[in-house]
View: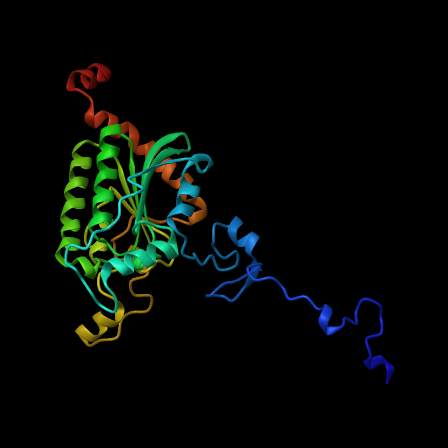
Amino acid sequence: MSWFKRVEKGIVTPTEEKKETPDGLWYKCPECKTVATMAEHKRLLSTCGNCNHHDRIDAAEYFEIMFDGGKFEELDAEMHSGDPLHFVDTKAYPQRLVATEKNTGLRDAVRTAHGLSNGQGLVVAAMDFRFIGGSMGSVVGEKIARAIDFARQQRVPFLMISRSGGARMMEAGFSLMQMAKTSAKLALLSEAGIPYISLLTDPTTGGVTASFAMLGDFNIAEPGALIGFAGPRVIKETIGKDLPKGFQSAEFVLEHGFLDFIVDRKQLKLKISDLLGMLRPAAIAATAPAAKITQRAL
C-alpha cells in the first residue's frame, strides 16, 4: 500500500541527518501549559501571554525594566557576608557563600542601584531569590540601609522589590537585627518626606514581610505573589484548620486590606512613575520652609 510510504522529496530524512530542536527556544507556562517562544516570553517581561502568570525574575531584570535604557549605577556592589557565628550545617557557611557566589554571580541576596526612571531619579533595592532563597542576612540589611541613606541624601524616591524566604538562619540574631535597622532607616526617610514604595513579589515571607516589605507609603504586589509570614503548612498545623482557597496570594492579601493595589509587571514602570509624579508635589510641600509655603498660598 504505497500511500503508507512518505516518498515525497524532503519528507524522508535519514536518522543520522535529523536535527534536534535546541534547548531554550520554547517556554511552557507552569499554570495554563500554554507554549510560546522564549523571545515572546521575554518580550512580555517573563509573563504568560495567555493567563498572565508572572515568572520569577532576578534583580538585573528588574533594573532593566525600571531604569531608562537599562542604565544605572550600582551601590555597594562588592559587599559580601562574613561568618560571625562560625555556622555549619551540611557545609560550613563560608563554603556555602563561595559556592552560591560562583553559581549566581551575585555577592548577596540584594542589589541596590540608582538612576533615572521615566526621567525621574529613583533608588531601587531588588532582592534575588537565587542567593540562598533571598534570605536576609547582615549584608542585605546593610545594603538596604545604605540605599535608604542615599535616597535621603539625594532626595529621590526609594523602591524596594522584595523576594525572600525570610531571615537567614546562618546568621541568627544578626539577621533578625536587620529588621529593626531597616525599619529605623525607613522612619528617617519618612521624616524627610521622601516617598517609599514597596513591591512584594513571589515569594515574600518571614522577617522581610514583618519589616521593610510592609512599611511602604504604598505597598503593592505582582499578580499571584505569595505573601505572608509563616508558610501555609505551618499555619495549618498550628491552627488545625483548612485554609481558604488562595490563602496568602497577593489577591487574598489585597482583599483583606494589606496591599494598596496589584500591578502587572508590564505596567510597573509607568505605574511607579505616575505614582511618584503624584507624590512628589506633596513631598516638596511637606519639606519646604513655612515662609515659602505661606508665600505660595498667598
